[in-house]
Amino acid sequence: MVYAAGVMLVLFAVLLLRLWYLQVLEGDSYLAKANGNQVRDVKVAASRGQIVDRDGRVLVDSRPSNAIVVLPGRLPEAGTPEREATATRLSVALGMSTAKQPCRVAGKQVMITALGCRIEREAAALPYANIIIKRDASAAEAAWVLENRRDIPISPVLISLGSGCVITLRVLLVHSCLGRLAR
Image (tube, rainbow, N blue to C red):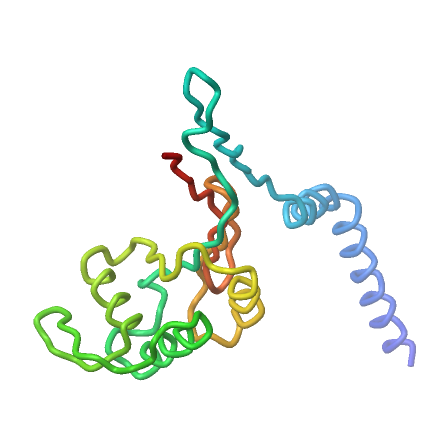
């Protein structure tokens, strides 16, 4: 009985020493790690503004716009049913054709959707470049992509707001400025 009480006392003392070590000696390093997980610096690019002629007439104007973008290197493997299903699902959501058409990719003729063909061709040309699959997407399309980003079998890619702010998500939605040229 005395032996068991001694073992319990030693274990309790070890537990208290470890707690003291973590709270007092290592507390500052854990606080810094916790703060590092909460605070993130994000660069936000300034809008481009207007380009005017000498009389003050607007030649080029900027407006906010959404572009839906994917990274081909993070999609499922090329030629797999998962990759084609991803392209089909995005085609349906973005109002694009889901009809299969012949597409020549890397010397092979395959039957895939128009969006799937575009993704395969651009991925073959530049495997690590972003592929814009829809420019000037509506707010509803952008919201659909953000709402369904966990269900679309795409590995993490990016969401970008403007040209300087990049946040990791599963589907890329770029908020950019599209210009209007005056006549």
